[in-house]
Length: 458
Ligand SMILES: [Zn+2]
Image 1 (cartoon, rainbow, N blue to C red):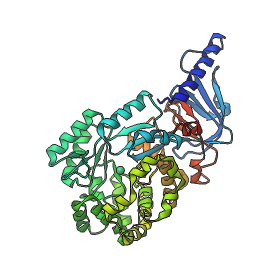
Image 2 (cartoon, protein in one colour):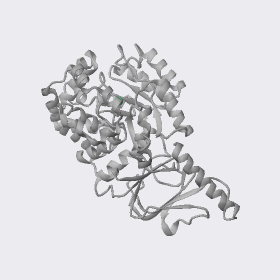
Image 3 (spheres, rainbow, N blue to C red):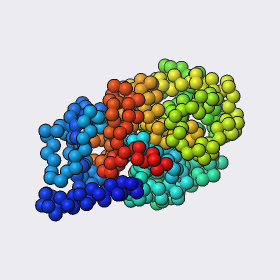
Image 4 (tube, helix red, strand yellow):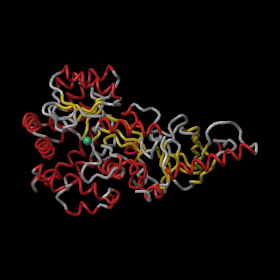
């Protein structure tokens, strides 16, 4: 699906090699060339038993066969790539991103082959999504919400502002026609408006992702949102909602601050009850723990020492302007201390939700301040394991479970017929989740990429 200048040359060389073989009579049949990744331990993305000394046979953009070496015969002309001693996982999915053109290569280098864009400039994100589908540049697949739907006054100037249920339905209709893959509802959407949005979106079979402000999580779950972002609406369901609703009504940062500060005051038993109620509604949560963690430490000067940030262009790091944002939000030392104090309760909620049978999916909110596209996905995996998921459960959250949230049954699993999106690791991610960073090769749409060669083009 994606071609960089470097890999186009690689594909051309490959095509020439196959053509030569065909002329020599060694080509069994017409069609795209096959590549076989040989000898790795294969993790299927669904938490199945790891398959040792396995083979992933890829043809064109799809997986043709997966199995033990002795069970996967290689047709003539197959290009064999020895990855013995490695691990192969499905391409990772960041289900809460805000994509920019500079971030596309970063996602691929970090093994993120699909992103769900949760709000963006509608024209540019649909163009980027289409370009990715057409393979006109190195890019992850992009599932896009286009412009978020918000109440009055809308938080962002490029949001779609709705005033009543009629305009809310019209906004969904327009986004559907424009090519949105999902609907994103924002913090000023009331239960009444959310009901209209989810009902209208159901007509078009579009999932609704909600960053809640004026609606609590359980109510949103019952109204049929597909996912709740950032654990929003949970304190409103587990504590005293009215002061929080008032804060969200007041302004975005006032709402966020009150919401984030409230966690440390929440009762563990009540949180567990909310987790059970929410899991019953079949709503997925995209907790973006990395956002909570990073934003809780913006007052710590060492936050800027994170080596992942070196992958972010200097002009972008300048544009983030963290001191300006902290000033605008009015965050004090006491706020940051409270944010950090609430983190264990957020972890507890994620754990309880998973135990209740709920689906947890990875998301990052990159490229918001100090969140590196691609790298943040690995930080999120670590934080999910820290919260109590096993490495296998965390991998599912980033692969098959994330694909289920997208409604993309061809993604997130390594099986015949699925998209050839995968990551080759030099170390075992089940032994230590930080090993998802030990990436040697990434395949997207059947195109094999060496991250180091892409890094040189940044
Ligand atoms: Zn976001």
